[in-house]
Amino acid sequence: MNIWIVNPFDGIPGEVTREGRYWSLATELACRGHSVIWWSSSFSHMFKRNRSVHSIPLDVPFAVRLVQVMPYSQNVSLTRLVSHRQFATGFFRMAVNGLRAGEFAPPHRIVISIPPLDVPAFAFKIRSLWGTKIILDLQDAWPETFYRFVPGHGELHRLLAGLLFSPWKIQAIRAVKHADAVTAVAGMYLSVYGVNRNVIPVHVCPIGIRLRELDRCIAGVRKPFSPFSFVYIGSMSLNYDLETLIAAAAVLKSKGYHFRIKLAGLGPKEKKLKHMVAQLGLGEIVEFRGFLPFEGVARLLAECHVAINPILPESFIAIPNKIADYMGAGLPVINSVPGELDEMLKSKQAGTFYIARSVESLAAAMIDCMRNPEKTGSHGRNARRLAQELFDRDKTYPELASFIENLH
Image (cartoon, rainbow, N blue to C red; front, top):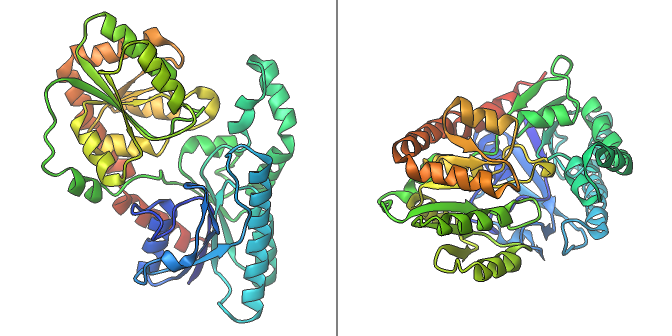
C-alpha cells in the first residue's frame, strides 16, 4: 500500500534525535511493508530555521519530501499563515506533478495533520483525481487555541473570538465533514471539531512515548530522597501557568519547606520567570536547565519526585506531549487542565488537580505531595502503569497503523 503522511511541524530524521509522532508512524507503516512518503516543510517549525533532505540518514525506511515555504519567526503571525498556505499549495503542485510524471504511484491513504487547515482541500482534489482515503489526524484545537489573543473574558469574549475566527472554524468543520476517517491525539479534539463517531470511523491515539527508550536513558539513575523536587519540561510560552508556579514556590519557602523546582525548556516567558525568581529570592530553589536533549530530559525526570503540568485552560490543550514523559518516568502529575486529563489522573489515582492562576491551590497541592510521600509514591507507580497502558508507542502505534490499513 502507498501511504502519504502530510505534516510540516514535526522534526524530521537527522534534525532531531527523538522520534516525533509522524516519524514513529511512518516507521511503523514502512516496517509493515508499505511504501511511505512523509511530506514536510523546508522550514523547521521547532528550530525556526531552513532544512534539507541531505541530513536524513540513509537507513530511514521511508521517503521525506520537503515543500518550499517562507520562514517565520513568530508562531502567531500573518507570516506563519502565509507559510501554511504555501505548504498546502506547494504540496499539491509537487504531488500532482510527481503523479503525472510517474515519479511515484498514487497513494492509497493520505494521513494529514490538523493543523494546518489548508491541506485537506487540496488532498480532496487528489482523491477525486486518483482515488484515495483521506485520514485527518487532529493534533490541536484550531482556531480555538487562538481565542486567548482576543481581549476580554467570559461568554462575550468567547462569542467575539468565535466570530473573528469563524472562517477558520468553517474550514475545519468542512475538512472533517469530507474526510474518510479521523484520528486524534485526545478525545476532546473530536468534540472540538464536531466529529460524529456514528458517521465516520474514529481512532484516538495519544502522541505517547517509546517507554523502552526512556527506560534505557534512566537505567541506573538514583532518585535522591532529599530535597523533594518538582519538575516542569517544555515550552515557556503564553500557554503555560509558570508565573503561578514561581509564586507558589515563594509560598512554600516562606513556610520553611525544603524543596527544588527544576525547569527544562526555552520560550518567551523565560526572562520574566528568571526576574521573578531573583526578586523573590528563589535562586537556590528554582533551577533553569535550558533546552535538554531527550537523554537529559529523561535523567532529569528520574531525579525528581513530582511533575507539574501548569496549562492555562484557554489554551485548549487536552493532553500535552509532556504527560507521556512524566508518567513514563513514574511521576505523579499536578495538573491544571480540566476535563479529559483531570478525569484520567483522578480515576487512576496518578495525580492531582489545581486551579490555574491560583497560587494557593497550587501551593496546597505541592505541600500535600511533600507531606504524604507514601501517597505520592503510589500515585507515581499508578502513573507508570497508565503510561504502559495508554502512552507506549510500541503498543499504541501498531494499533494506529492497523486502523489506517483496515479503513474501508
